[in-house]
Amino acid sequence: MLFSKKHLIFAFIALFFFSGFASAHPTVDALDTALTNSADKKSVKKAIEELMKLGESQVTDLLLEAYPADTFMDYSHPQSIFLVNALSSHGKPEATGFVLETLNALKGSNSPLKPLLIYCLMKAGLKNKDRVGNFLSDYKLEDTDPDTLHAIGVMMEFLDANLSYAENGNPNDVDVDERVAELAKMIQRPWYQCSKKLWSFNPNPQAIFIDSKTQQAWNLTQSGLQELESIPSHLTYDFKFTFSNYNNAPAIAVDLRKTFGSDPHYKGNYGLYLALHEGFHQMYQSRQRFVADKGFQSGSHYPPKVEPRYYRRMMYDYLKSALKGSVDRFTALSKAKYWYNKWRTEFPGELSQNVDRHEGTAMYYDVLAVAIGHKGCSASKSQIISFINKNYDKFFQTPNDFRDEGYNIGALSSLQLWIDGDNWVNTVAQGKSPLEILFSKYAAISDSDNSMIRQEVSAKEAKEALENEKNLHGDVDNFKSQDYVRIAIPNSWNNERLPLLSMVLPQSMPNDSIFITTEGYYSYSYENKQEFIKALGPLPLFKIKSSPCDKSYGYILMSKSDLSIYTNSQVSGANQYAEIAAQGSKVTDKRGLEWFCSK
Image (cartoon, rainbow, N blue to C red):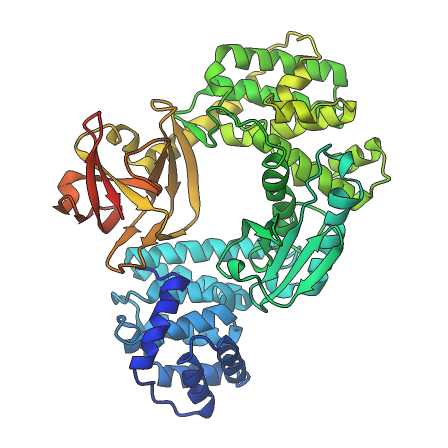
């Protein structure tokens, strides 16, 4: 199974009870000494930096001598885990040769540390993309271990993604102090200098930016940007962003090392996007006390329906045309109203589930904030819209599913309301969607069917249906079967979730659950390391609105025939998709369905 950083921290403690490896060079001795003190991260970093000065060839030879491949065969040599974690954390390209040589030596073995070694290449391999990519392509053909193959798949996607970021740079190319100054400059205008130009409610927002590599932190408030003496203690865990508090006030916290792109002006800068978009959710919507969306769910319908997706796509196209001026604005919005009426009348159940209001207004805010951050507070509405249109494809995308629609349609309709200057912000907060407010001002103009767009939407929905069918493994039906157990994953467990494949809203249970299909899932209880849930392949998780298990994260399904032990206090078992070992209690609900509530 893969180990998270928390596992590795626990494992570090065991170093005090193991003797170090023999080494033939003082720099390796220094590294061994540093690794025995898990609290002294500076010493570990310094030791690695000194070792890497010797160059990749010598580093490879020295580390192979001190840490031979057989020490990676199991967990009986904890130093091997610590070494991989340290090399991964510091990301020195000179370590690439050692990792590749070790993986070669472990080829065909059942070493549980092979996936961890592959993830070690995440940073070291960035400087050797082609070399590492070619190695992994060949390695994948010869290795059949599921964990290793999964790690290779994630790594290959990571390398491909980073190659595409070349025009914007990557985290290792960015001067972090310069980046923070750029972010502050871009955010200060919409947040502090002319906040009323975007939103009438101003909660005096703040952001905390951290650099997890150098352990620096900055706080951005109305008073300006201030570097902090250290990262606040409650932000020392891994995250891309998190809702937080600082100095008794809400803040959005962003880890700069987990965002990429160096252009501060567009949504290619993920850190800027997170600060504006997620900050809006936390500091504007929550503090303005937005009325809760009844039945709000975010995901794609399963099985999909073509007609509502087609109606919404037509709405999107006309809203886009109205913004870009390719069709007369009055005509475009009146025809959009026609498709809005058909969608609302024929599919009323989608009204409460769409994300037009919650996510649409957040997207409106981040798009407009970036435009104002770039053009300045004195820019006219026409100048702002011209900038957005010039960079339209960097802000908006043609929606591919139910979830995407709400972001784009909600944002475009909000921009139309902003252009008109109506007092619409408080109305949105009170529960109406921006589409409902906008279209109340227009009479529908009948529109003809567009066979090309209908065909395009139909093809997309058919493709999505096949993908979801493959990833869900029949779990939508199995959920209601008494032959399956619903096993809770507690929030108290440390969850390491690998990339999402999709979020799915089953039509047969619209008010009950949300299925989330992932490429892999690993969850461990640190109070009892014998407890775990581990995915062996694409794994459907599901969340439900009410269940007999308190404070759970989500659930996996397992057939009773796959459970080798199933009592009131313990469950363990495996199938082709997942393994589990947990303690807890068995509960049977009113429908006769069995649940296992892990502790």
